[in-house]
Image 1 (tube, helix red, strand yellow):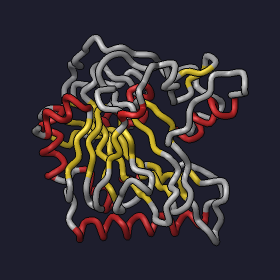
Image 2: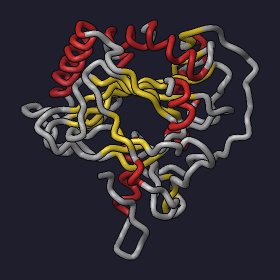
Image 3: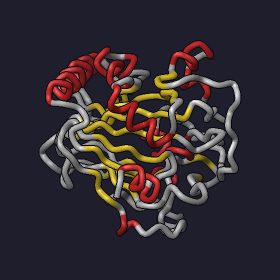
Image 4: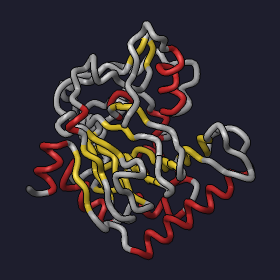
Length: 294
């Protein structure tokens, strides 16, 4: 099966060794530099999501936010020609970069990310969007790989609300999702996954003695215009500057995708970790629970 066929049928594809050893080394050093900087941060803020036991002596970072704005190595990776070539085959010749994040699961820790579709957070006028997951560390079945349910990108948007509030996660039982089909995306450092914006995915805590650092870049077809969170793209000048391949357009392509708006937001909507906490903290033995990712 070709890369394009796999992406269309399963909703994801993986490329081994997309970044060479020198590039991986640079990504690792840049990550280490930012984690070192986090020692000076006490609580989660615009740069970092921190674990509850984070300290200056023992930095525990959940997420480095917008890493492409925090280090030139990540900014350069956004426009890596080999990445853009693959994107052109999967979502078209005209592509806009959306945003970045670097999710970290330190050894023997890290928070679970419950099952969700990225589409639920940021619907656009069409669904030609995807996320590229660049493996900064070797990732195997034991250090919390990203997991995706094949074929889940087709069909309706799943319910990410709980008690009438957007919770950023779904209940697989009530949505009749067979999690036994989920595929663990593994590979050596420098490998990358490409997953559709509607693909259902999640990850467990890291139960191994090795870190798991995954750099995520989000891209959209240039004619996919945001229906919410336009500010992520910046002002119109930045919106235009985020074209990484081809050209922009003022004519959005609108397709009949199923959309549930991600509102109302929970009390602290700062990141997916805080959003997903709403369902966990609001649940009780008598309410519908969100199963933990395993």
